[in-house]
Image (cartoon, rainbow, N blue to C red; front, side, top):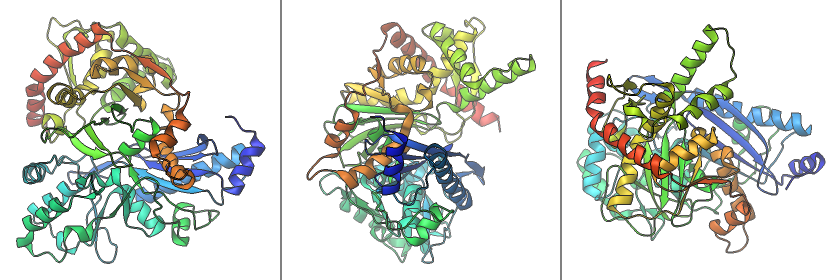
Length: 534
């Protein structure tokens, strides 16, 4: 539905809108959606994590500077397009990269720098908790970070009064509420599917495990509360309004939906929260979410079990590395062009070079690459070294070079998906893609279909991403009909927005299978690089 400028202006003035904000790894995006639930304005702020004292982190100052910058960018976009000011909206939602570790003391002081999902430093804790619970506890999960800090005898642990994620932290500061949406909470600690809350039996097991430490807290005291999609999670406080909108135009009292992680908002933004649907978010990292028909037969360290924002079981395969390494190669080719006196626009550079991948040999001509900027838990790496290697008789040309960079971006993901498809016989009808990997759409779809062996579609709205997803969750809370499920609400919005779908090409699938044999065998080369290249 397209509205006139005057109609949109009236919507904004009367607050018949919703705001979604998502803090991704490299960009903080803010979207404003109208009465038809589609974006009418947006803003963004670019940022980057830092590696300080062997920890991937963002400082508190960077978090607020980025959040305020992204909101300011939205406000400027609204002023420019509609000559009006945002004073209120119908609802707001906060989303951010999942997992990680933020702990606070009784004075609300952050006790240790924010440890992001990117840190592979909790191997011992992850392994011990997975064994204790007989349930997969990935290294990125908050409980793994907490237990590792306990195993390390870190000084801050006895002082903890609250533990949360980045989304939970921002939501708390804007509303005063220490809560999370169930999807985000399921990346902190396992969820009991019957109660849609933390698994009480496992909480008791954890408390027993650490009882000899005599900490002044129990786990249930420091975890955020759990809410389902559709429930209200507080309102914008006067202090929160000033924190979010430094201009002072935004008024307090706006209701908030439960804060969610980028995995949950990706599911919503691609309308893949129903059983046998899946979505894959491919950017700095890549993760696939498959909504399961039944529980898995056993725990796998490569597979996370999380939930949809309305509490259904999801298998998540998460790889830390995806596009960063080939972004660096494309930037290098851009430098080469510039040195030769050619200024090529970035979109053309990407589309041309990535397009070459479709002209390469199905198996990349024997080339091998690892885009491990950071560690990769699926293949058991605590650190990474980006690596390109070939034998003397490989078919080394630009098409194969670009193809191997795209293939390897999905190598760890495929390792995890093989477990679901081959060992657990999980069935998926379609995977919906979103993220930077699909910007050159035909290439992204074709390569992803080869890697996943499942039909892959990109919705017309895929570019809107998780910020739109959390805005939809905020709208669902504010506007749902009596008894209307999240799936029914989303189906109305997505009707007729199917977008392009690509079936897996048998030749490409066979080529990817060949590449995966090489990828798996070559992991020892990557291990040697980590060991000897300090």
